[in-house]
Length: 198
Image (tube, rainbow, N blue to C red; front, side):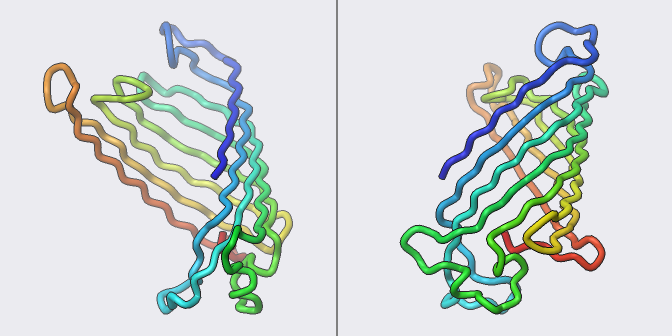
């Protein structure tokens, strides 16, 4: 598996604080590349069988621009517009999902992927004591995004996500910590469009 990212930020409005997070409004340019050479796929629905087991390779490229604004010490609002290209190809040394599910009507299976525009809004509350290896505090977020298909099929859908990450120190020097994390995601078709299997 391969994953590469870059993020460039430029402060538009500076806040009164010092150090990390002192900027009140940032402009961000970002990009992502992900290659997953062997993804499992069994089909869609509650009645799928093990004999349907197949695999596919996905390659995803995303470029975006975002505005991040701090709404206080812990709260951040983010608005992002992006372009994404997803390619679906043959897996390495395994039965291809495109062969197993050819003609099944699975959305996105007959095409080689697709391109689309992403519009995302998210609200986050972050009280972690450190960005990495936190030992107290937490992070909570909610996010909604609209995915508008441009090619590969009529793939337009809403995605809703929410998550909680919390750290509980067990001693005074914070060397022993219990961490809790949960994430929830659901996708809903927009109008008469469909959600691609990938």
